[in-house]
Amino acid sequence: MKSPKNLSYHAYAALITAFLMFTNIGNATAEEKLCIEVTVEHSAGIFEEEGHDEHECQGEKITHIEFQTKKTGRAGAQLEETQLPDVSVQWYAKAFSRVTYTLRVWVEE
Image 1 (cartoon, rainbow, N blue to C red):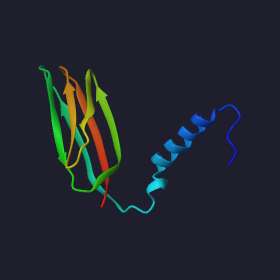
Image 2 (image 1 turned 60 degrees about the vertical axis):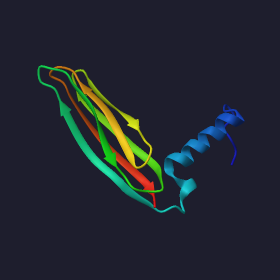
Image 3 (image 1 turned 30 degrees about the horizontal axis):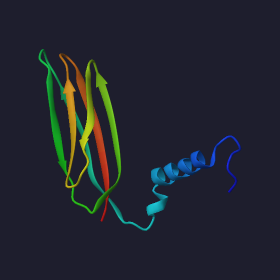
Image 4 (image 1 turned 90 degrees about the vertical axis):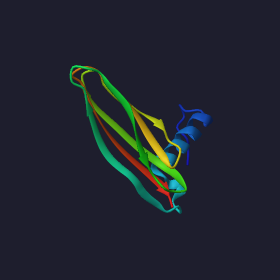
């Protein structure tokens, strides 16, 4: 496979590695299972709300994670812990705000 002329060897190698990790072609022999699939919504009234949600998952190792957020107002959520058996999400919602996150975690069996 020829590399594009405008990419250095290292940039091309990094691009191929990222593609293989994203598509999971490198682990084609590993058996995967969907361990966590949740959609969670948090909202705040007049006072700020914050916290973290823990989601338990059993497996050998995490193969990939999908994490999406949708918010209104001043709110947010982010992955806090990604070590098995727990995956946790830290979230906050300022006054009259809302955050919804969807978390999907696949593990190697």
